[in-house]
Image (cartoon, rainbow, N blue to C red):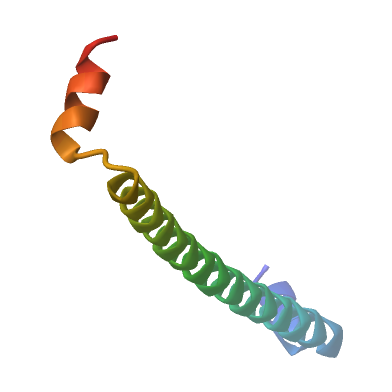
Amino acid sequence: MGEKGQQMQEDPSTKELNNFVQTLLKQMQDRFDEMQNTIVTRIDDMGKRIEDIEKSVTELMNDLGFSDDENEKGGKQY
């Protein structure tokens, strides 16, 4: 069994396969890291857009004469 284990370690095709798998795993990890960064960036952008929309809605409501007190009362009347 010891000789067989040594033969497998010295076999060039085993080394090639090992290198191929290691390279593939590295590429997959890099791709996942890239995707994670992209997703986080998009979520941050969406959060900023939502905040902008909330500000715009608040400004529009203020322009129309609604106040925060009236909004709270209106919500409680349901």
